[in-house]
Image (cartoon, rainbow, N blue to C red; front, side):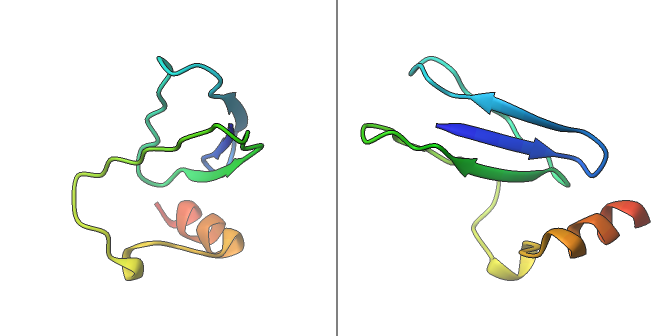
Length: 69
């Protein structure tokens, strides 16, 4: 499993290929998960309940939001 993290200025790919590796993605960082292997498991933990309206789904909208902050 690989994750691309992007803060609007910098982009990096993180490979999560061992069960003892974790990744913290802070607010205002775009994340894309891909390259799943058949045995991959992705566990997501959050500090609050999921609310779809709290998330930006469009990358261009994300870039505009990041520029404002």
